[in-house]
Image (cartoon, rainbow, N blue to C red; front, top):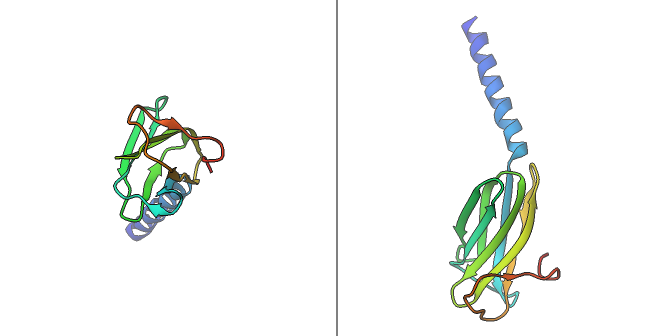
Length: 124
């Protein structure tokens, strides 16, 4: 009887983990200069004021960033590249189980006064 109970507990635990994986969402992307050169050490932020979420990470040497576990919801994102300024994406929707990709492309040095909203052509 104990063996059956143990197997049942293990099976339930694994099914919970498996179902949880389908609801995990992530946000990832790359930061480049003039759509060519990777920009490392750029601070990337994701915020949801309604949910009280504020996450930050830094791009790696290839300019890549990843937020591995993001709750579904509506967010704003920003990239702050020292010497190049800040770019803001005001609306990023994350749904259950979705892998969202948002790239940032810096084209010139920007003043350090706040973030510059992306145009529709840049937000792809």
